Amino acid sequence: MELKKARVGVVMAGGSGERFWPLSRPGRPKQLLCLTDPNVTMLEEAVRRVEPLFGVDGTYVATSTPLREAIIDCGVAPESLVLSEPARRNTLGAICWIVANLISRDLGDATVAILTADHLIGSPDTFRECLASAMDIAEREDGIVTLGVPPTRPETGYGYIEEGDHSSSAASNGRVARRAQSFREKPSEATAEEFLSSGRFLWNSGMFFFTVATFLAELIRTQPAAHLALLNMAGALRANDRDAARREFESLPNISVDYAVMERAERMFVLRADFPWDDVGAWDAMARTLPSDERGNVIQGNAVVEDSEDCVVINDEPGITVGVLGLRDLVVVATKDAVLVCPKSQAQRVRTISEAVSKRRTSGA
Image (cartoon, rainbow, N blue to C red; front, side, top):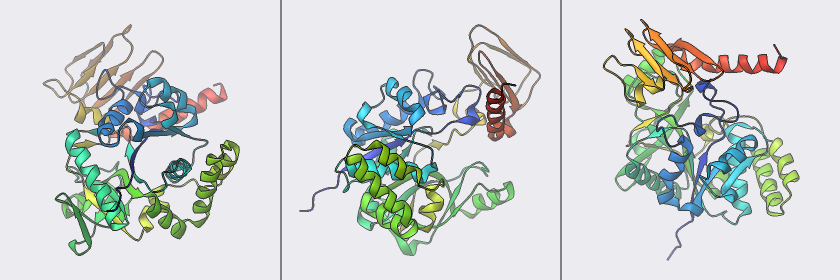
């Protein structure tokens, strides 16, 4: 009888969360905030959600070196299971670093679930069942599986995946994965409307499932230099030579794994997510994910909101009162040292403010 492969879950927690400025800062990004639960960080929610599937010893957290200590201090995972990249190399680098670490720990035969730290996910039992189905298909088909979320609106802030036809599909526990026809970047509003009406396009969840062997096979075909660097990293990590591992990592191209591998993979499947999901990508998402008053206002913290509709008002500083009067469709966020005010429709662009503030501080202006 064939032995079942080891399965590990890796929660990706290296993002900077700049669209949640001013609450999100370099040392406390989005995944370390209590955005959807006042008592639990998004990272802790993500880890606890998948531990029943992988166990404590099989649930890793991948992050950047500057965030390593903050994540260890949170206590969401043992220190040995916090994998910190030595530099930023986009998601291709992150996943290569993860796989190299697993190989160095004698997990080269494992099936890997690449998961997100900062998404709102409902129905945790159904979510775990969906992950198990995705890994079953990845193992049986020697392919890479991603989860696609059926869109509910013409969203321009997400990437999309186009499903292929039924002729090349795979199933597990009643769930059917189709071959991924194409990956699409964030669309215009008109294109997003077309995607929604077609019924063929799904939101790209950023979650991937593969065996280590399958990922290596796709990597050597699409990115041979990165494949060699990954194997060299694994050898260096096994020898506890962090400097050599860092040098190999820094040789990787700074590109997304979607562009580098997934869009070009020979056996790429997309499985429809059958659980509630939200990217929680910017402040406007709070209107979808948090309770609102009778006029559609989401209010957190010390705030007085009068004659206003469909606003998101977040005050993280108990010592001050935020007053909102006669406003519509705005985001107002206050912290002890910064205030953000913008239309909800511009929430995806808050990163530009965060970047401008960082440049000002760097220049001493």
